[in-house]
Image 1 (cartoon, rainbow, N blue to C red):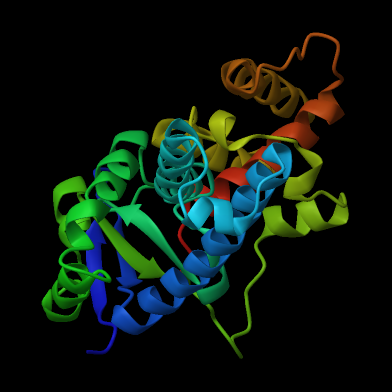
Image 2: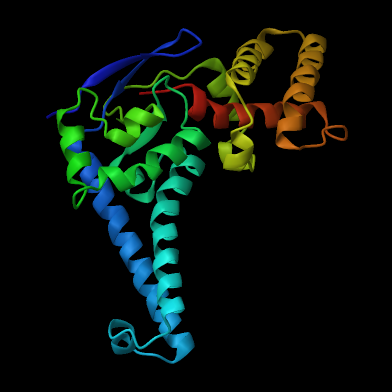
Length: 268
């Protein structure tokens, strides 16, 4: 079944188009993630045996203490579950495998996946993996119109392709030209995924409006507006702006614009 185009209307009444990720791309991402997890699991086992001066034969013959074997099994389970949960929440909906393939998890309303959604969809991997090798999950992904497994249905999430526009000339806006001329990039503003979650749609709308208007304002109005917007948004960055100049505040807000643009303005 080929990936299909789906339309999503956000709570802010913005219409977004996504291409849902089908079984092939999701399976490829899952295989990559499993290879990574298998290598990490092997390293953990070898590390434990090294610390105990044991051998692989000791482990497979259960000559090691049962509590150590039980603890290792529990640790491996937490690793495999926590890997998907943590990466999807803290890395914008993508595990390493999903990033390589070019897909990610989002909510049905088009926003980034929430902590609860990530928790639910990954807990239900236990059911999707039944009876073996994710057979139930694969069957549901293949036949569902939006390629959802049970975890996606319950958590209200969907896996989509990242947009990759090739051979298309991108029109640069005035604000983007200004950012380029100043030599600013999103990397100039260190902001963690946790801090990023503090910003909402209203914050993005405020910053977006500011960035597209401030070039048209007089010098005095521009300084006043910059201070006002910085005072509103800086607490979410835990940043003290009292000692910063007007030019520094502008650069901070423009860099923040680049960061939030990836989160809220979907270029799919």
